Image 1: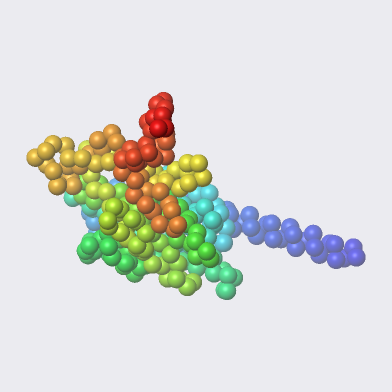
Image 2: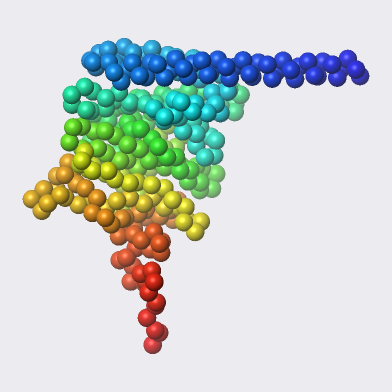
Length: 299
């Protein structure tokens, strides 16, 4: 009995020691990644940036060989790139960008770390940015080999039955004139395939697979996820042209101090125009009552 207890304690110490060693290795990789990313962003030419980026990605893949990388905080790295874990702990993204000198266009990169229960190990799915060749962006299906690149800052699981769709909020620096905010959908297909662009955005008489907001570089817009009274909302600035003469040109759209929203209903995002977060209603709703006002008397 004493021998078995000794073996158990010894194995426990060994396991703890191995885990600590793995964490230390991941920490060492994080330090290298920070240095590499800084070199990428200060490099003067696009060719130099891509050469350095190959080294960065190779180092990141080495770090992700350790299971501990899934839960490791990456506190320093997360300040300069996205390392988001989905709220349901199903996957983690490692998402970064390269800015093209002078023209300020962006290339996006993403490795998705996901546990494969059949293999009993984590798999890495690489996303390939093909946004430069995309057409009819709000209505097309994409996948991991043909990804509409962005830098994601929010992951929203939408569970319906046994299936989970993930709604992603992202940013794209676009070009010298404008930025973009993106609302995307993502589902896993099998162990190592991803599909983007489910038709779940119901906007008036239209249904979209993703939503794109293009707006002036001089402006800042908000696209945020909020849980209000147990209902899920994506609330965003309403955009208007800087002047009447600039109507229809996305590069000159700016917030006009009003808000619109999507509310999640039956697995789909329903558009709400002129949304008031205080009441969780659209001002265009005939039953809308502004805050601090009372309902009209019933006849």
